[in-house]
Length: 480
Image 1 (cartoon, one colour):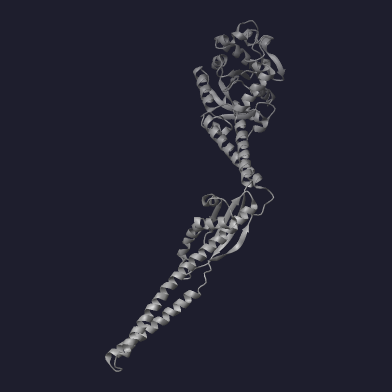
Image 2: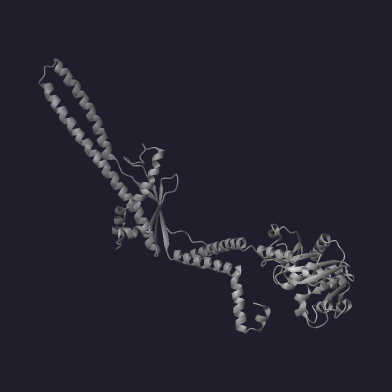
C-alpha cells in the first residue's frame, strides 16, 4: 500500500490499514502474549484464592512390630511413604466423615487431601483444601487425629494378638509342668527316671518364667503412634494476595514467551537489525547511519571516509541503491562530501520531476550541464530528473547518459546518483555508468534474501556493490 493510497483513502480506511499494519508486526504479538499471560495468571490466582489450604504436622513414633520400632534400621524410614498412603486410605476417610458428619463419599473427600513427606524426617504434613477456611482446618485436623487413632488401634491389635499367643504358650507349658510333676511323684526318689523328670521340670519352670515376663510386658505396652506437633493452621497471608502473585508470574511468563517468539521470528524471517547480521553477506559494511541524518554527523562522516577509501578515483560516480523501496542517505552523504570541501553533485532520479531542466533534458541535449546544476550549498549542487521523467528508464542506460555523467564529473569531485530501489528499472539501467554501488540496507525491514536479490540485479546490470550502509529509522536505534 503506497503513501498516496493512504493519503487519499477515507479516514476509517486509513485507520483500518494502520491497525492491520500494526497487527503484522511483532509488537502486537508480544503485547498479546504478555496480556494472555497476565490474564491466565490472574485467573489461576483468583481460582486458587477461592480455596483455603490448612496443614497439620504429625510426628510418627516407633511402634513394636512396625518398621519404625526401636529395633528398625535407618533404611526402614523409606516406609514412611506407606504411612502417607495410609493417611489417604478409605478407612481413615470413613472415620473423618463420621467425625465431621459430612455427606460425601471417601473418594470425594480424599480429592481435597494431600500428604507430604519431608526428606530425612519422621514427619507427615497433612493438608486439606476447601472454599471455607473453617472446613479446611477441621478436615486437616480430623485426618491427623483419625490417622493416629487408626495407627494406635492397629498397634494395639497386633500387641493383643501376640499376647494371646504367649498366653497359650504359658498354658501349654503349665499343663506340661503338671504332667511331669505327677510322673515324678510316681517314681522312686533315687531312680534314673526321677532324676530326668526333675531336670525337665526345671527347664519348664525356666520357660514359664520367661513367657510370663514377656506376657506381662505385652500387657503393659502402651501404643503411642505419634502426636500432632502442629495443629491444623492456615498459611499467613503476605502483602500480595494469591491473585496478584499469580498475575505477576503470568506476566513474567508472557514476557519470556514473547521474547522467545521474537527470537524465533528474528531467526526465521532473516531481517537485518544490526551490523552483526550482515557478517555473512560477504560485502563490507561502510557505515551505519540514521535516516534523519542531514550529513552533519560523525556517522555520515565515517561513511564518507569508507566510500572514498574504497573508491579512490576522481571524479567519482557513486550510485546509491536501496535493497528496499527508497534511498534515505543520498542527500546526507552529498552534504557530508560538500562539508569536507569536495565538489559534489547530487543527481536525483526518483523525485523533483517536472519543475525544471534535469537529467532527462541533459541526455536529450535540450539543456547543458550548467543549466541543470542547481546550487544548494557551498560545494554542493543538485540535478533533478527533469521535465520528461517518464523517459528516464530508456535514457539512463544509453551511452548519452554516460556522456552526461562525464560532463558532470568535469565540474565535480563526486557525483552521487540517487538511484532508488534495486527492483526499479532506472536503477538497474544507471548502475552500469557508476564506478561503484553503495547498497542501502534498512534495519528491521530488509532481509538477507532482499540483499542477495539486490546484489544479483546490480551485478546482472553491470554494476558492482562496493559496500553496504545500514540505515536506522530513528537516531536512537544506532548501535543498539
